[in-house]
Length: 311
Image (cartoon, rainbow, N blue to C red):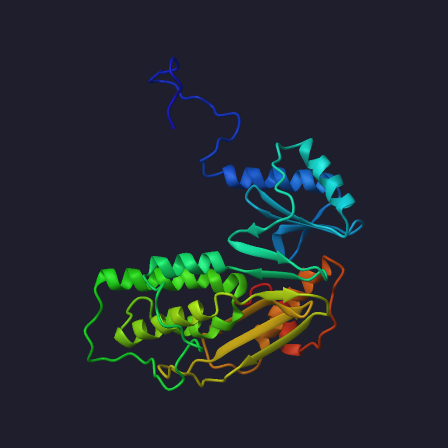
């Protein structure tokens, strides 16, 4: 920062009495402001996500991403009411019914169903990596192709490593948003981000070909209860370097996935404790919106969840 013109005094400093955009403390101060305003209007921060606020009386939920607000309620009257309240505190730009949010597009159906997808984002990713005209593939991985490291192969250059890592990151955003079907393939390939060899690059290209073939796929939400599925492979994997387990889960609400993951654990799984902990987190998420599911419990999960210093 620099002193304003006319205030240059080499032996003095100026005290800043308010935050400015770009300062390290600005994001926290902005969040505290949003939190205070929403709390004053009856909203409570969700325990499972600090950027989700809910009002149990009106059953209204607000998702906050920096200065973008996504509001969901049972009727338009409740939305108008919270909008008027926020307009007294902030300058708002009402974009109406959301058609996209953070790169995720929304399609609305006559029967009340809602579909989400990232077709525009997929097309951008394919263009960035020169795969717009590639031959599509019907599956994300070749199950017969081993992805173990080859000790006799020359290490990749820095440009290859950077390009591989960028592609993994781009696909990761797609996977987290709307594509649980590429979670396992992406989790497997991400293990080789620092030293991608030629067969890893071929596998990554195949995943991009699959994404092109399925770019029109949507997740459609209609109605239904929360259901969760979890599993771990207890050491077996398409990559046999080290005895590690791959665990995964998927939770469905309104007939479609809302939360999912596939990742390598730090050790061989002795049970489904990690995924069961995720069950409890998901229950907390939906408890805030009066949609708490009834799922079975496990003693090991309770022990881990109640231990504050569990690593």
